[in-house]
Amino acid sequence: MKEVNIVGATGMVGRELTRQLLEDPGIDKVRIFVRRKSGISHPRLEEHIVDFDHPENWGALVTGDALFSALGTTLKQAGSKEAQYRVDFTHNYQFAEAAARNGVPTYVLVSAAGANARSLIFYSRMKGELDEQVQKLPFRHIHILRPSILTGQREVRRPAEEWSATFMEKIGRVMFRSYRPISAATVARAMINAALLINVPRISVFKPGELFNLAALNQQTETQ
Image 1 (spheres, rainbow, N blue to C red):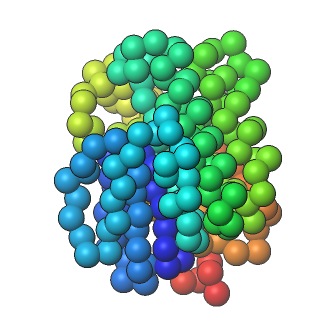
Image 2 (image 1 turned 45 degrees about the horizontal axis):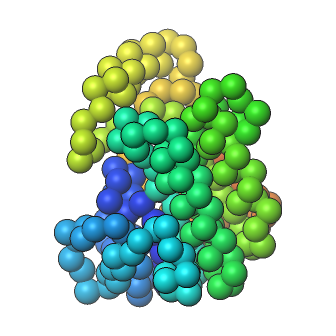
């Protein structure tokens, strides 16, 4: 990878992903699409402040070797299910569609554990619908990561998630080990390693427990 794109770069996983990619001297350009200034400064960073609702203004800019998507919000932050769906599904899909149209070969998406387009749970159904739709786009490789509860430093605290992460961490020591909390840094590393995999199926879906192993892969060994 020489030129990569990130949508969701100001979120917990996206910020960590941006940091790790900028630390890689082999990458010439990290292009991020944000609604407001990210506050990140680096000579290889290309920041585009855009209105996500108008892909006609930014779609042509999504070029290069890979698109990483860590874009997402909560129902509380969005204000309604319709607004959350616009961010988590519509905006994500529009970026993926633009990348595929521009010939970007690799797409890496952070989804969620339990994503299922036929779920009765709104959040799981929304994530599952996105997973299904992006698989229809003509990327050379599509990697979908489904982490469990995320841990790390957020701009806005989510007390319920913090409590859930603590609870799952404790019971994960004796059961449900695959669904134990995972740090944003680990997910970001797994995203990068997924994009570097070769000789793999066109579509790869990684379950919660598999992300720890994916993040631990030796990049040089896996890409030779």
